Length: 394
Ligand code: ADP
Ligand code: MG
Image 1 (cartoon, rainbow, N blue to C red):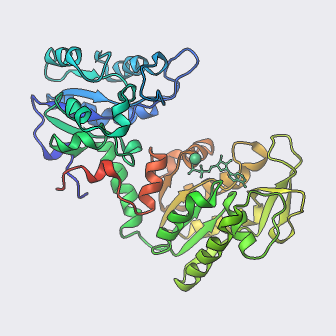
Image 2: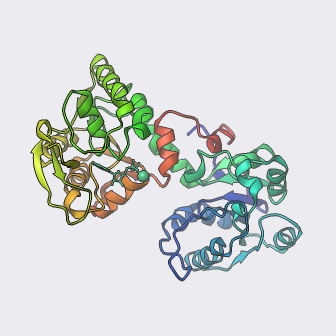
Image 3: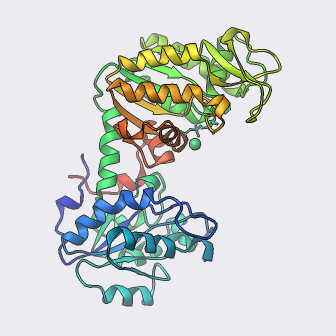
């Protein structure tokens, strides 16, 4: 890793301001419904408290749009964090200002505090300099462990790094290492599986991965635009008419770079994307005019599975079908299982893809499931993430 981490600096006795991603889903009663993101930050928090830092955490939660909104207060998160850490967490009711300064002034070494939702302040998303300065005044060192928001240049993810020594936390380090492996020198054969709804979301990723991969397996709604580019009819399937030309270009580019680009040879079709719709399997050349392709078919799943079994490195972004509905989940589940059995170094990017791997029950057999949907996508596009760029190099 090229960026400094918490291991590279002396944190003992210091006030360490840590940007975490505690944007956890809450249930109807306002309790934390899924604490995955809180757990993901524990290694960094524990390291800092063990090394006698005063740990000041900051995060966003939901989209309060720059206003105080009681539904998005971080108190439930502070409660869950205290349970997980087995020690009290001081919760501030604001993220800057005199009361926060006073609360931090009372902290002892090894204590943990959590500031209020940084997005209650409109200056956060504007990356306002004086707001970033106010945040920075709360700490001696800045740590960014919020990979999930690293693609945003906000005050707490980027601006604050102008005013403090800035290093990565362990989650950030792991994400950059694992995703970096895919773009760095991946063990070959290297296979990419790309799916999801829209080809426009994935064009840049495909374009970037074409430089490295040996094979590209395409599924999901976006496969239809590729089928259309090949001259096939896709009925009522999701197609981006203005991207057909681009899809054709990517096919040519793959051929020129000797990348094997696989498209579905059969698909699951139905009159509509509804859970109780009558579905059936048809060859990709025979999609009926009144039907939608909503999953890859069993023959395609078998072919893709074969490719995955021979792979040494696999990156997967985007489900193969509308996996949220049982009738259109089989293709995605089959690919997840083949990936789990492949023995390849496997990296999953994208929020829905991560959910699919969990649904398939194979999450523990995957090398790395990224915690950052949008951030992992931008990383795989080869773009610099502002929250990462702001950290000190080793
Ligand atoms: P990720 O979050 O992993 O990056 P995307 O957000 O790009 O993935 O795509 C996931 C969405 O794509 C899912 O909601 C899924 O229902 C949808 N999808 C997959 N295949 C199809 C299809 N054939 N037609 C319409 N939508 C699809
Ligand atoms: Mg998604």
